[in-house]
Length: 123
Image (cartoon, rainbow, N blue to C red):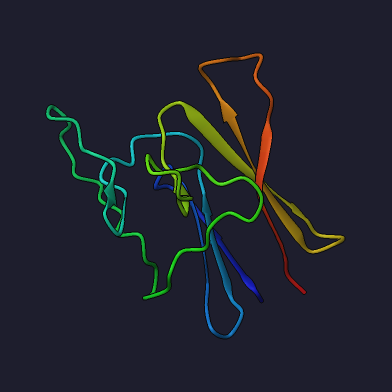
């Protein structure tokens, strides 16, 4: 097995272990307030009950920057995650080729294009 596929944090992020195990979290839009990575932090709204902080590292692994079209920080550098109440994310696993492709869609604009932003292959 080279893939651990999980969700429920309402964000997208990916990690790879030294042994080649891929960890992919992809679970639609939501309120993953407090998502962090280095200096970047998605603020928790003042009236929000929970502090759903995602540290940005899973099993002490550094996050993988999306391979095709990552979201950009305010300074133009790529973010290794998508955490948004407006952007929905989904991933497709092609079992015939071993390719996992991740896509995003801006729900604020129903006529916008679906954008493939990450893709990787397992054996």
